[in-house]
Image (cartoon, rainbow, N blue to C red; front, side, top):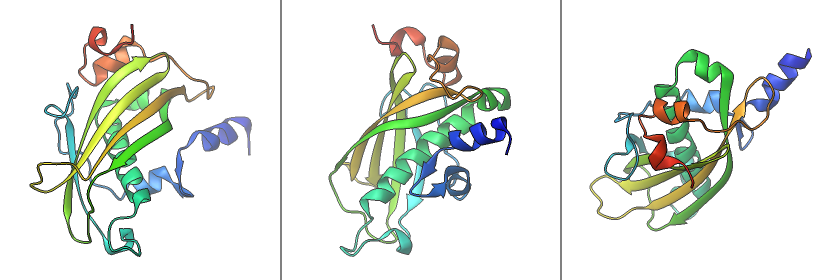
Length: 178
């Protein structure tokens, strides 16, 4: 394996031993909106139905599945807004997930995932996600994730520039740490 192939392979995100490209390809794309996602009301929306293989011994969606759903929603949003050249030059990796579980989701229940972007600081960009059962007034889980933008060629962190924020339809002045 040459150096470029080895580096490319090491930069691919993995999730519990499953290659993200394989995992993500099985999830539906976001329904929208795609641009200007800066809070709950303007969030990018996707949906899931809890599957039998996602249920744990307590009869509800396993906590690790919420992490996958959150990650899939974020990756789906990026895939939908970035052009091929941008995706070829940069990749996002998760450095931290913080999830508060508030309600159980059981097999067959539909959930709506709303994800929006927070503040960029250097190579990091915070992203929020609210997961609710269909028609629920309160969340089943809320999450804040810290994503790090990497240069694909070098594997090194890359500053989140104004152009990256603009891909998401965001005003850089509103989303940069001061």
